[in-house]
Amino acid sequence: MLRVLSFSLFVLSWLPGLTQADSSLSSFSASVDAGSVLLIWTLEAGSTCNGISVQRSTDLLTFYEIGNIAGICGSDDQPVTYTFSDDRPVLNAENHYRLELGQLGYTSTRTVDVTDFSSDKIQIRPNPVSSSLVVRLENARFELLKCSISDVSGKVLDQFSIREGELTLNTTQLPIGIFIFSVVYEDGALYYSKFSVSR
Image (cartoon, rainbow, N blue to C red):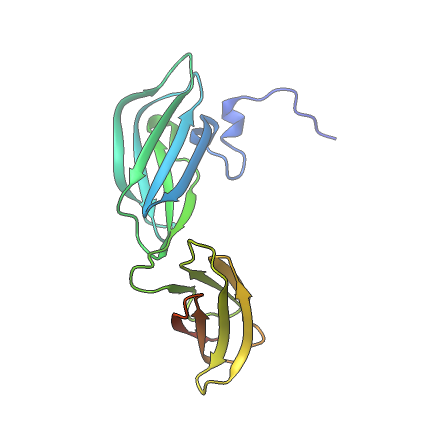
């Protein structure tokens, strides 16, 4: 059995998925707050860097700088916490965030999904779907929602009620084609969205 008796930051930078920048942080989080994304991170005591670049991507391939903190960051003797608000995240998509901590390099990414219900009460992704579908519903008051899935002829294939604002549906039992997800709110308001199944 291998036992680790001690380690260095150099060793940590070689662990899969863990970068030298990650090992300098005690925390790094991303959360949606009223349509913005709030990033909060803390540099460990003794960790410093020359500037911080806040970066965002929607495909995990190309990252764009959306903010920066110039100058020496961190402290030799105490942890330092930073915050950044992305007030213009990409709506109805996954937003991936990372930090470039000067000479320490890039952190691993944090991902949040920012859903905008201003035009549609129902968000369905991915669409088209092959096996698993995520449905997001505007339901801040936790109403009992009556949901159904039907084919384009109107034949109801499934019905259920939920109070959550998000659900995952297994679509492997549905044939290839176009379907309608509908939801009825407690006040009787009806909303629907089409999705297609492909394989």
